[in-house]
Length: 65
Image (cartoon, rainbow, N blue to C red; front, side, top):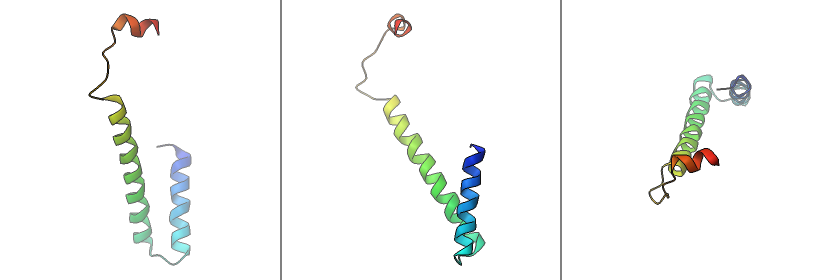
């Protein structure tokens, strides 16, 4: 994960803590939402790559493209 993303997630945790949420709950919430987002993106990308109705393309055609 990129450094700026870790900084942004840390800022979100600090904002939740300053709003009165306990530190452990804020940390678990941010980690859970982040993992769910990463999982959704990977799941969507995997479905786009491995489609059942994909037309097979020869290696030579891929090299020309």
